[in-house]
Image (tube, rainbow, N blue to C red; front, side, top):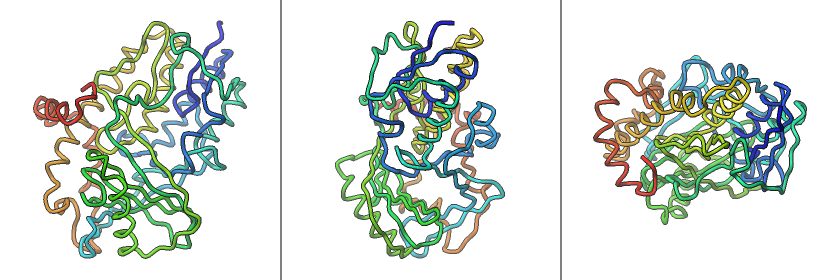
Length: 358
């Protein structure tokens, strides 16, 4: 078997590397940064558990990925539009998502995957690159010309109890959302914008004011974090010999900007296709195309409910609403209704995001 070369040491690239090495391949991963996760700075992100019927931890376990990184379940989400009278709680009997740390820091998803790759015999080459057309797998992250969302915030230490807060308010996050995640004394507060990126600084300042007024938490040793998201429904999964995975293939969620689960899944699928001689474009298209289209429709519908700062999705204070009422999974299901709406939503979103391949 010829050695496999992978460009990029993010979740998709390392997942592919782990599976190929476990199958007996000699695998070399080239990463332009000095370590796995260096793109991030301790950011806290969500590994979503609502987009598939199978629990995500079980799912990635079937992809030979162990949980050797910090991974806290979110069993209750608090959602508000910034009004003290509009704070809802969405409890559930299984996690809505799992929060994971990103970066070249202890306990992060990135460092956990790096350890697993090294244990499997993968050769990691940091601060090195290869020509993309010579890579068997391209896992180089976001495509800069196809950015649809940006985020800015801080990570910090706090004495506040665990909290998982979702804020929908256009002054705090234009057409997007802000979040406050606190687990075991470690917090992350960010604003995510889906338009008017020049408002990013002002939106973050508003986010911090609103969160502090509503939840009164202390902040120690804050460090800045930031990120972007890219997306496509006209995904290119292969060019020549190279298979594209994760954000390099445009695999992210236009609705909320989630992408870790898709990244891991696509990395596993690319490795499986190499190992078993399958056509990756066919397999990936079948898996991801319906979800990508569904999130176009969902983003279109979400922007229609922005009236009165999303009051329609935020109930009265102290109201506990079951997950079925929130039904996050519907945003990722290309249902009959979504198929009907998609021909209307697609041109609308193409106009909104002229640089995206939708």
